[in-house]
Image 1 (spheres, rainbow, N blue to C red):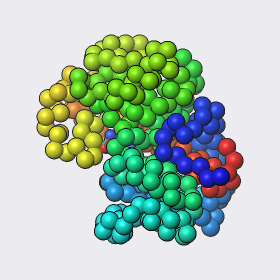
Image 2 (cartoon, rainbow, N blue to C red):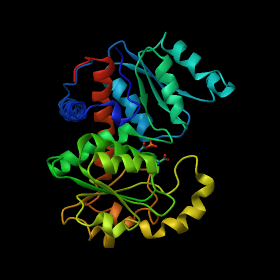
Image 3 (spheres, helix red, strand yellow):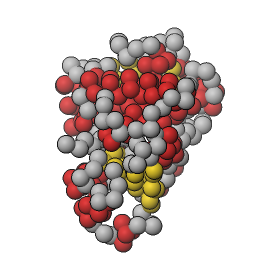
Image 4 (cartoon, protein in one colour):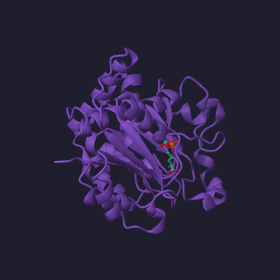
Length: 307
Ligand code: CP
Ligand code: NVA
């Protein structure tokens, strides 16, 4: 049966850990020039209704590196812009290609595509979540820290799509996740309540960035206004001002803590230039790992199909 990746919750804890292992292995194989071309003859369609640098290029590169062929589509150059139902788009594309990677607004759109496509559908970011980002970030954290045991991640900023995927990852893997968001900008309360309950309080929500950062192994942030929220950007700058990751906040974290950011970053807003440019913030290693994680994901879904 085909597998989709719409949410981190689509994977078991064991599958997440195996995917990270596989990504690390494929990273080494790529560096050694020994990557198997397990996508030979496979075609992956990428439908992007929002801009992207990392996700688009890392997915296209992953497909090429594994010997397959990507086809990039925007809304404008497909009939999606003229309101062809996604259920029809899914059934048509599945007659031509082997997997669909989609970045869009409503999460229900990726669910609709997955429901109707007979090939795997991968969520490359919706307003609700960004699972590929968090899976790759877990690889980065494991590389930098050596393990995912006894891990505390502090999320500082907007309770957005990336934060939601962190909550799902904590639900699956059981690490501690401290979320600090301004009042009114927390993740959906039903999700937070569930996570607090099911992790016995390892997921925590506060409005105080210092409290969330205290003793954390990883400080993580993201833009204050996500794609589609451009009109709110000005108002959000004021509300979020106390939530910047700067050297003062970093000093509250564990002495060897790292700072991660999914990028793109706004220096002087959610993160100071000093911190993001420092060795404490390996954000380009983090961005690179998107490629390796997605190579592993595509190989699992439509290549060797081994995990
Ligand atoms: N982090 C991330 O998904 O970046 P892009 O928007 O450039 O793909
Ligand atoms: N929260 C951001 C993530 C970008 C990768 C957005 O949705 O725009």
